[in-house]
Image 1 (cartoon, rainbow, N blue to C red):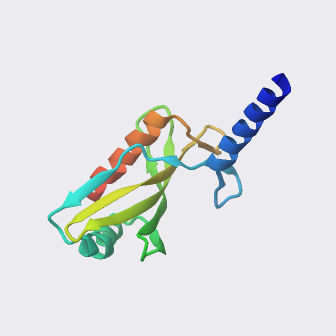
Image 2: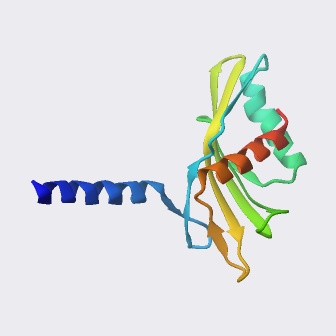
Image 3: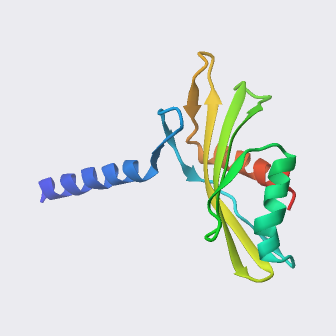
Length: 146
């Protein structure tokens, strides 16, 4: 019984690690975690929010983006780098948005994020603190001003 429990625990741990790990463009292992925020837009045509408003806002902010699957509303945003007033010099951010038309006039937006900090050695280190990810995600959503 003890061996069975240890095996189950090991398999669950390995599964959790495998589910959260993705590889960045540079080949270093980073974590793709839930943004911790989601938002909805109502009384605006969902197709216009998805296909016009969000892309226009990102272009205006000069933030790179691309559709992973436009039909399903999967939008990749980033990477973009911002300076920080805190203990870290810079943050690199990437967002994996899911834009869903609940109905013709209601849009839901949620997704995952990869947030990294630049350390003193000039290396990007993945942030796993959920509160920090939610704060950066909220700041990003507020910049969209939808």
